[in-house]
Amino acid sequence: MIKGSIVAIATPMHEDGSLDLAALSSLLHWHVENGTDGIVAVGTTGESATLSVEEHCTVVSHVVQEINGRIPVIAGTGANSTTEAIELTVAAKMAGADACLLVTPYYNKPSQRGLVAHYTKIAERVDIPQILYNVPSRTACDMLPATIKILSDVTNIVGVKEATGDIDRGKEVMQLCSEDFAVYSGDDATSLELMLAGAVGSISVTANVVPDQLQEMCRLAMAGEGDAAGKINEKIASLHELLFLEANPVPVKWALKEMGMVGPGIRLPLVELDTICHEELQQALFASGAIQV
Image 1: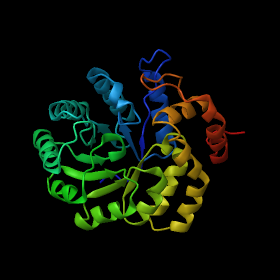
Image 2: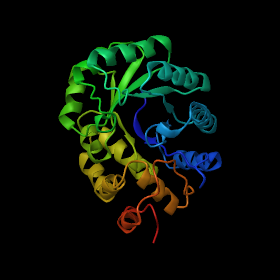
Image 3: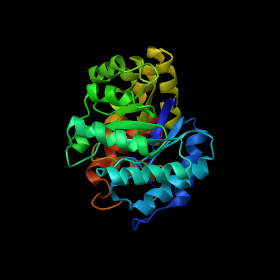
């Protein structure tokens, strides 16, 4: 079971929007050095929606090669087409990913029966650990706890990233599913509370900019040391909020640029963070220690 602070890593790009694999390599080594427990490559934060299939596979393969077994790599391979999700998941397995993260099909709004059929088909076709990903605020598709329970009985479906921010929802999933089914927080603002309730980690946007603090907060929370974990969380709480001033990954890519970690590139239709948001996010970066005064 993959546990702890798992960064949903941004995909660095040049100003023209092309992939910057050199910057990605630097980011990956920085995360390993700062204690990050796992990497999600080409998730929402990695701009999966605007990468071609070839680019998607290139990034996953690059991450696997650069990490070289030091920490687990989870490849984002979800799609709103079951056939495409299978194709991406096959490619991730061939590249050597440790697991895959599959967002619910977006836009076409399948029923709960459709979700069961979709995920079961992928799990049957590709023998790799698979983590469900429920983020209805972005997909217009809510995977209900009862559906997660059904899918948790599929051998290689091993966990779920719950990004609703609803603690009671997360607790219900944990109650319904067996102890060896991993529940991860996908909502930075509520991740501490969910881990104190039994989640085994956080798949985090905030970890992009303060990986050491996120890792320590997760470690303490999973050990039941709520007070100590809470002190760290208080220091970075403004980041949990301000990294969503605009659609993810717009703010986090701007933050990483300010930190000197990546260039300014981002894919249309997303554009660089509005200047009216710069000062507030910059102050949060200073307050958290992500940028030194």
